[in-house]
Image (cartoon, rainbow, N blue to C red; front, side):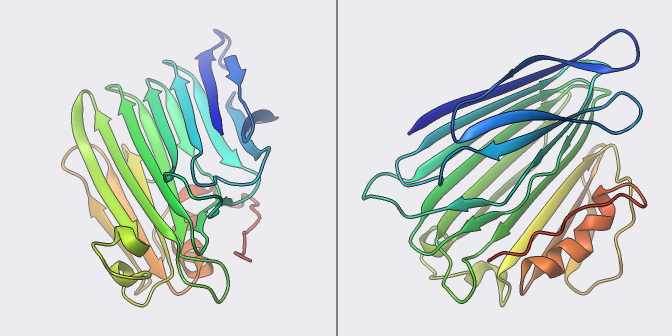
Length: 249
């Protein structure tokens, strides 16, 4: 299956944000779901079909213009599945940010037998603001991790600020399962430019590191996704905000 989705957010000239483009194809369906006070627009990714499955080629483009504020979430976890014998499933994300983008989807679950690659490039203009979160769960309950690779590049004002490549399963340099995470089965990262809206709770499972430029990186590893969410969730949500905690099934 091939699918392309695109969202373009622009300032509306009245202190709010309008969505100049909002389109998608199953399984990458986009729905505007409102927004927080202050003129932000919120969009949810809705899975219109199972997957990604082996052989799927999915592409998502996000553009946030100067003065616009966009939050992207998802209604459920993304579940990478085995499918028929075929090349690895692939999701390519490209984001261009001159305003403010909050990327806060539910985790990716690498089900046993999957072969999946997510490749992300985010270009942040000088003065732009970014909160980018990625969570990975290595297998469903009581099953081994599938094969998954996540590579992420974030640039600020044309200069590479963050470059990360994580592989589990066969993608972990020949190791089987989540060996690159020690005993962990879930991992999460948050990149924030220029800084984090919240405070990292004291935790032996999480760390906070400054980047070589504007911004910080927070990362957490846990035996399950709940430990990761407990560490990173307070960094991403405004005080008092309600959020459903997804539990991997």
